[in-house]
Amino acid sequence: MSASVTNLVQQPRTVERLVAGHATQDGAGVRLTRVLAGPLQVRLDPFLMLDAFGSDNPGDYIAGFPDHPHRGFETVTYMLEGRMRHRDSAGHEGLLESGGVQWMTAGRGVIHSELPEQTEGRMEGFQLWLNLPGKDKMCPPWYRDFAAREIPEFSAPGVTVRVIAGHSHGVMGAVQREATQVLYLDVHLDAGTVFEQAVPASHHGFVYVYRGSARVADTDVVRQRMAVLGQSDTADGVHIQAGAEGARLLVLAGQPLNEPIAQYGPFVMNTQAQLLQAVHDYQQGRLA
Image (tube, rainbow, N blue to C red; front, side, top):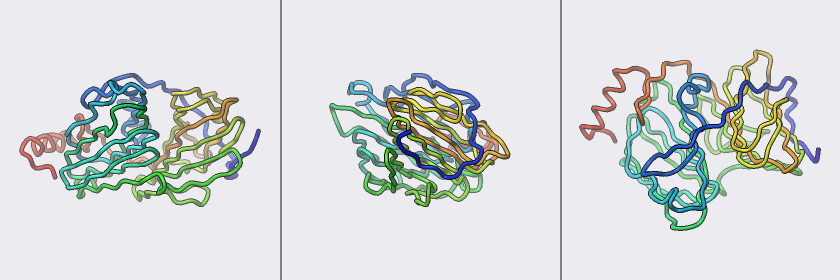
């Protein structure tokens, strides 16, 4: 191996299963791959959804995501390449550019749009939906853009890690969340490089490879595959080694909320009654 970043992980998580995701369209016709949704919401609580998008064809993304509502969770958009303008009904506006992160807490409700500010070139990135605990689902909306330079990172020979949320090897991420204790890393590895990350045994987690390939514990993970990390009371982290062509991947983990999940499209609450109220509030123009 060429180099390594270790955290003295004694018993790495195994890979429970590999997930390919499925191609779909959202917004006004944006083509993307939905990697996490549906049944995996319970297994990977507090994570509700992960979309991966990437295309050099403007027809795949140019229509963007016009005005639409959210309530009860957080959205995290990480842009690898491209430019996207955010506006919302709470008065927030920002431009998400290459390497940047847009973190929005929908809380009690917000209507927002995400529209490309480019007519050519590549647009690539991810959108993650992170659940809120029941006590926070009706909190005031919150929003912040983080430019690429504002995302903390660290490096070693052959390794670069961008710490979007949580903590990694003594580096504090751009965002911290008390309830979900979310960890969100973008890890870049040269060929053969090893990266280890401590993860509490109680947390749910996964690795998504978006460039190259990697070996997670004893399982090979190719490009555009998500490795769901197994649960074990004695496991203390994740061990990753890049393949022959190197790897770029996301490492995510979080404390499960262990609360009921009731979802209707862009609303995620705990009960059906709360969902009906969310739809009614939206129809009556009572979202923020």
